[in-house]
Length: 214
Ligand SMILES: [Zn+2]
Image 1 (cartoon, protein in one colour):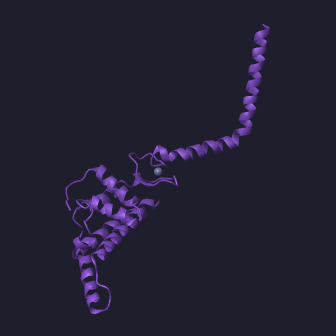
Image 2 (cartoon, protein in one colour; image 1 turned 90 degrees about the horizontal axis):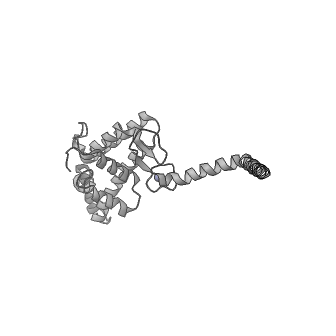
Image 3 (tube, helix red, strand yellow; image 1 turned 120 degrees about the vertical axis):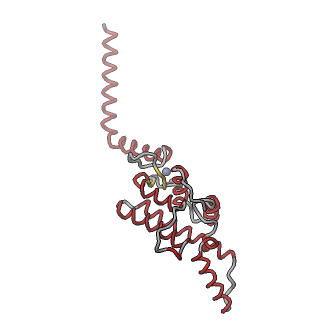
């Protein structure tokens, strides 16, 4: 994993992708692969001493018993489990309304990642790895991290480009809600509007008639 300074856009894209990724193992694998050169390790098991230790213990246990042996498939599954754990904490931070708790969950995320990657140094602060930088960036810009209010949105976790409050990730998502608001308004004001229109039509007819008479 590289530790150079990252630009804001790539950090935002990574955070959104991690928060939005589905439970489908294929999606999770694609995400891990996509970011394995910077934000994420290629596998939490291969790149993390703690998880390697876990694996060694498991293998020892397997050899001592009649259990099935530990396979690379298990490694992969375990690695994806760690990824979903990180996603779960990120989502918690993202959807938390209280800024103090939001910061806490984000900090917890940095700490857990550090613990996964450097269990022997967990009492010391982590290096500025891309993941550490990304979540620190989230903490500094947390007011722009929003959740799209369209219940059918596929990628509801988004980072707005400005501080002005927004409820939807894009105009497409806002569409149905805006229509619903218009419909609600119409139902409320229907009688009154129809009365007005009728009166206007009547008025037009009268002036038309007068125009003819003159
Ligand atoms: Zn949306």
